[in-house]
Amino acid sequence: MMTSNRSAIIFSILLAACAHTPQQAKETPAGAAEAALAPAATAEPQEKKSLDLPKQELTGQMLYEFLLGEVANQRGKGDLATRIYLKLANLTRDPRVAARAASLAYESRDMEAATEAFNLWLELEPASLQAKQMLSMMLVSGGKLDEARPHLAGMLAAYPGRVGHAFMKIYPFLLRHPDKVAAFNLLRDLAQPYPSVAEAHWVLAQAADAAGKHEQALDEVRQARALRPDMESAAVIEAQLLRRESPQRAIDMLKKYVSAYPQASEARLFYARILLEQKRYAESRKEFQYLLEVHPSNPDLAFAVAMLSLEMGELEQAEDQLRQALDKGKKDEDTVYFYLGQLSEARKNDEDALQYYRKVQDGEHVYAAHLRMAMLAGKSGKIEEARELLHQTSAQNNQQRAQLLLTEAQLLREAKQVEAAYQVLLQGLEKLPSHPNLLYVAGMLADQIGKHDEFEQMMRKVIQIQPDHAQAYNALGYSLLDRNVRLEEGMQLVEKANQLAPDDSAVIDSVGWGHYRLGNIPKSLEFLRRAYSSNPDPEIAAHLGEVLWAHGDKEQARKIWGDSLKSHPDNAVLQAVMKKFLP
Image (cartoon, rainbow, N blue to C red):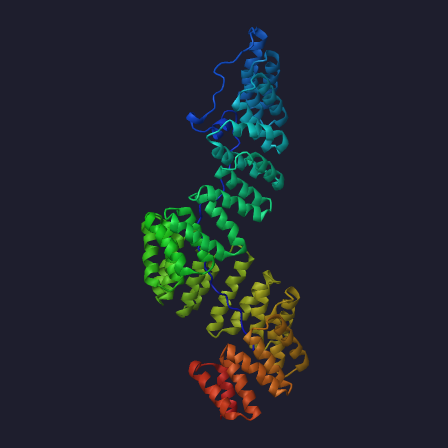
């Protein structure tokens, strides 16, 4: 039995959850790094209020050098400004000048000069927390972890009441380091003096995961949660880790967490998404609905509930939520209109569906909306209008170009214009000569209109392009068997298809038909009964009935034909075989 490919529409809902890792710190110029790391003013360590500055007379030459450095910097010549200020810093031994040199070097991304300037600054002002912060971040960004280690440790020690905050600020810099194991080892060493700081374990969990240490990551995040049971970001990280080995374990863990902390929106959103991934639509919708009640003005949540209702077949609720998404001002109105069109089609209200599809003017669903409009036009008998719609649809890639051609061919074939459908695909193959789907469907049409040589050439080309294309083996083999030519070769082809797709009822039918052609009726009945049991298709019924008739079981043959005819009164293959045996 030969079948044509059917494309199944599978939709998925993608909501952007909050990031589960700390926001990556931006590498900023002088002063900004300190601001990024500095905790509240009350927690800042005390630095020296005054500096023992060198008694240095400002000479005319020195003033000239200062002005030259500033002008160079203003004109975008940061490397020149850096060299000038480094020279002045060494000359004056003034920490303020060294700080300016470090800032300029950092801004110009001259890491060698920046390292020299920062070290000079620390030499001149050993207690400067700002210098330590900026130098450590610069060293980490440059991949010099060993050099950064003492400075990072000093930074953490400087924040006795804000160590967790400091860890969360340090981690984004280390996250970018290519050697994830080295980054983890450094963080582990830095965290060792702080076993009771939940954020330290939270950071270590992520670093361990990045380094491929799954079990250690789980252990660290659980320690974080033990220290702070309400820590939502730790709960989400644990769920992410659990999901890889067992989605059910992640679901169980999050269910308990959101029950204990119902206002944890990020964790609940992640919980809803895992339920969705597992196709537990009713449970997922319940969680999205809860979030929507907490955030009633969020159009994305309304849209998520609508999509789940649509998937569950609850069309009225789906429509209500889609309209809510529009009323709440969802920016991507085109997406909402597309799914309202889908909903109208599900209700068999084609006119409303067309109106919604016409409103899809932009975004990812424009192409699909045009396809649906063409299919609906064809369904109402407006073939030329449907073809014109397809010709006006812009394709973004070869897959879409092929789909447009296949859709046009399908419309023509359904309108009984098989030759015209075949010609459309032949023209398409001139531009896409090796597209397997185009070749396969064109070959099927060629066989249908009696162009058996062209059919065979196309199927063999499909097999050459995709050696595991079970349908092509099946189609070619069945055609030979059905025409009662080259039976041994045909049988080999359908058996190859059966190896590739052992559960495909059409292939099983072909093998059964092949055994019948070769005179092995018991084996034929074995396969045909299995095919009919899994799929009571009218063509399989026609084959099974014919073999039963040949086997002498005419009453059973009549029953199978009669039952199938009730469900498929217009099937030509079934009618032909009944006419052959029941004149």
